[in-house]
Image 1: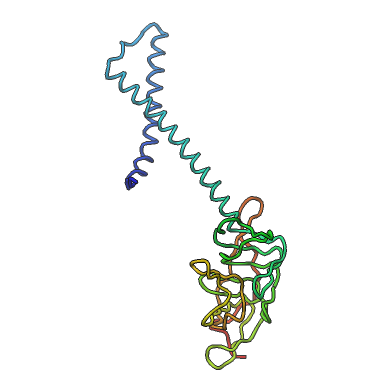
Image 2: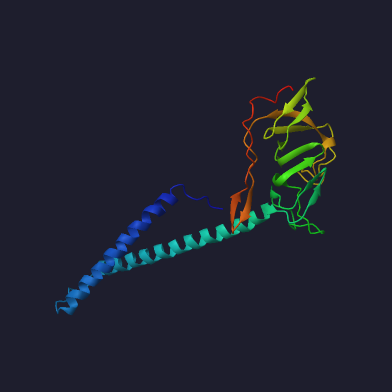
Length: 250
């Protein structure tokens, strides 16, 4: 494969206006000769170098126009392909689905990795082994924890919908407020990983595989979904101003 030249793009951008200017000048020149011909004052016949220059400028103009059309068509095809891919990575559940210890309600907006093989399982449910983030249409229980959204991309984060108290890594109780982000750490040997996939992906969120790690204040989990043929951000709940720091002692 031949590596593209680093200056190809600037040269192409510069060549387009120059070719249009040359083409415009060529048309004006031919029009000037035709005007003199109709007045009965034809100009002298073109010399060889003038014919070569006229043909070269004509080729330059049409090749530039063709290149512009190809660029527009290529951008359109790439946009269509990206849209098809994003319709597989950004989905909205049409019916409830169990995912470990949590039941994902209908209307949940999900962002996931590109599914392997078919986008749906044999039961018609979407493949969530590459799940990254979820925004729920309403608070959802995970055990005795109520959450508005969760993220399992690189780490497990829960966006709390209701206040909850946890026993932290140090022997003290930490109270997390609504809107706080709860971070979980895996136990020594989680059972909810898919061992047939690399890198490992979750088959479902099983609380027995995770322990409380930290509670902190950050921005809500952002998830986009399809609406009216375009991706828009899901509406995030409005939380009361949260205290800074990793939770607080009750």
